[in-house]
Length: 355
Image 1 (tube, rainbow, N blue to C red):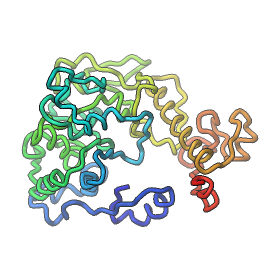
Image 2: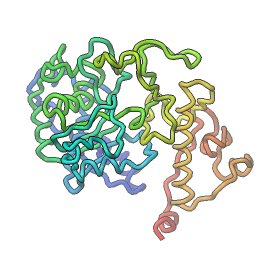
Image 3: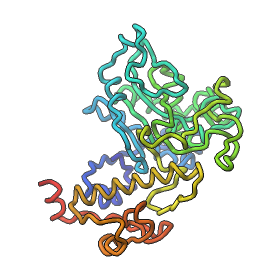
């Protein structure tokens, strides 16, 4: 886990016991070394985490791995992503040049073709939920990035940040990569790098398949499962202004990863039991998160298996009675106060898990 120095204590007590290797990393460029006045003065309050979000760029320094997948902690992997890795590691650019453009059937945004003449160095999704009319470039969604490690790339990012050429009305380099939420940090610098500085080396994936957030794809509210408005991803692609897939209708079996943003966090015990498009997929995502938690505790740590149809047994063993088929005994009631946190394993449970 990439951890800023300010979070060392929390990560040491909460993540290290679970087997995480902690990589304590500071920002790639100290704030005082940023030459651009506007970026230096404003970045600390930009987006979710200010300049601390640049810590994610240390993923490029993990040279012991051929491919790195950077995910936020509120992400759940639902299916293997081996096809992405194979495409980067095997580098079948020759096949792509010969016309077999996407033999693995990777779900690329807008059904665009894969780059033909260069290796693929990154896969990402964009955050169209933050898009608005007049925005020249949509930002990436900061919780998902598949990348090829490279110290050369990392140093280039350092130089971009150090120069600090982020403009109030033009974003990075004045090229329209901002301003938008998080544009001064990860959400803006990544598309600036792959779309403008190194076009053809990064691929935008379909956000319904990868990093699915169950977002409304249109710019007006959905009522009674009837969508309205224009497609947000069509602001810069007019041919898609009226046709866009609603990721909330994507079967969960076809989703590779989900990111708990709009669906809210599973550990807040949201029922989401209404029969609306806004809730149906979110409820499935949350249910899968609890299934994975149950697997961790029962399969890895050998804790007691319960019959979820037996409320008495469920509450006795796990403590929770709120919608046990959904929350598997880990919620006492709705809301964050109803959540029963994971108890870290003791030494005997660790022995069971490793034996």
